[in-house]
Image 1 (cartoon, rainbow, N blue to C red):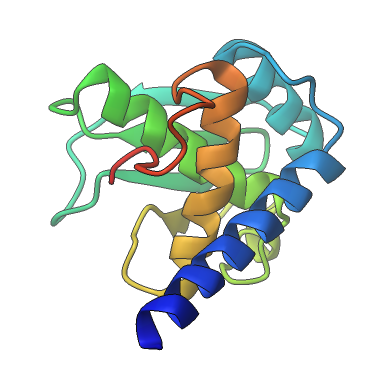
Image 2: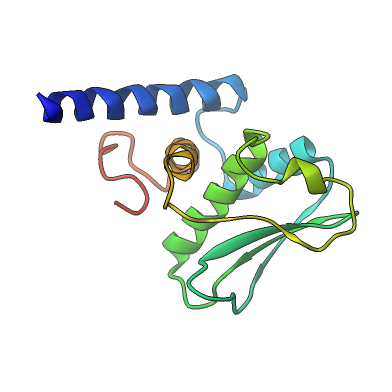
Length: 152
């Protein structure tokens, strides 16, 4: 019974993620640059992408500045993993994520990390499902092979 309940819960969480992305009004197919431009519009400032040696085991982080946001990824990631990390951070932006302090730093010159990519909590796992939906839109995932997700 637990296996059935877990599968039902997983399908429910995926449906919530699909609805969240549908509400954004994005086209079914778009490019990563177009998705990034939409995120910049949502955030109200440019997002600069760069690679950087990040502390600990972080694979990505998003930093708010007064006039721009900085999305950093580790330089040793594969291109697929780098894009997956970017999508995860953009999912936080699109969700105006109450589970991170991203809103608190919008427009403030703090230079503090607003949020980082982690899959350690149910909240971050839910954000990852939204990132999977975004990955479908840019063609990183095959819509006929939805099960594995970006990293699974």
